[in-house]
Image 1 (cartoon, rainbow, N blue to C red):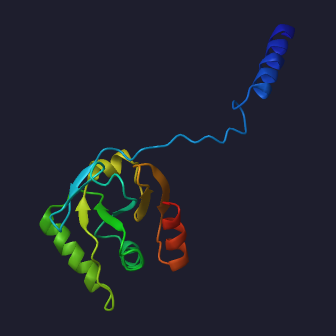
Image 2 (image 1 turned 90 degrees about the horizontal axis):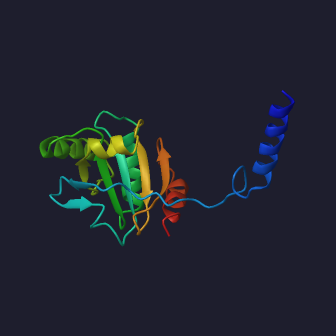
Length: 166
């Protein structure tokens, strides 16, 4: 028993003096966006490859998500000059995507959403998307730098989220 206690004390001592093992390691591994490709309702293909060089937001959503529509309108209106892509968490066909896009536009009289709507259930699954809305901010190098779960409708919150892409 004495030997076990001595070994435990030595092990704890080694861990507390070994840098980065138990605390204080501020280095963060860059997590790249998984390889993906979607054809949106605007007939454009968006992919992890052709988006390199520009920051963008992937908004994981669903046509039934009532909290998603206000977020879609708010982000599209505020960040209209930036790349923002809606991705359905199921594999909807183009007709369903166009219908959903129309429904979103009809949900708010004074706002038209120009952002592309697409579908990629596999990407949602690989990113462990469990809630909608979930927005993932990707920098120009393809690194995921932030994830926001839930509505994002306040201008200051949208700006703060996007500012991290710089």
